[in-house]
Image (cartoon, rainbow, N blue to C red; front, side):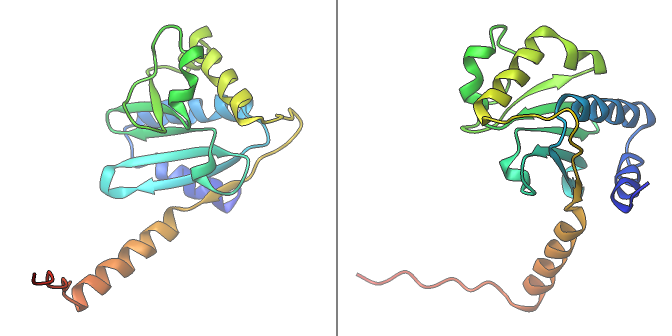
Length: 170
């Protein structure tokens, strides 16, 4: 097991066992469905959320989709979600964001549903990705960097009070 896999296993341990099992099984299905894509892992401690983005690059914000776990369940987020409207015949996509929409996943079998598979296919086509079944993707853990940035931001905020510029007088 690689260091990244070990870290990811530790992140799953933060959740109830049933939710952790669901998250692991969904991840396995997504890795199978999206071979060769890089998994970019984020841990948002303040939101109790673990997010695994599936990207052709090492940048999570360029992801095709993302699996998110939080105490309330699992969600599959689609980048460019509003553009997938034609593939969303059953109106599964939720959210009102300009870029990202999601579907809730209650079981691993949900990923195999024809309507969710249609969304996945449309997302791959829209991103113009050529998935290679023999390719292996990498795992990049971004959670530690996040924690360090947040820690530095808190330290800076504690040392310097925020000063606002006075409004110009008329």
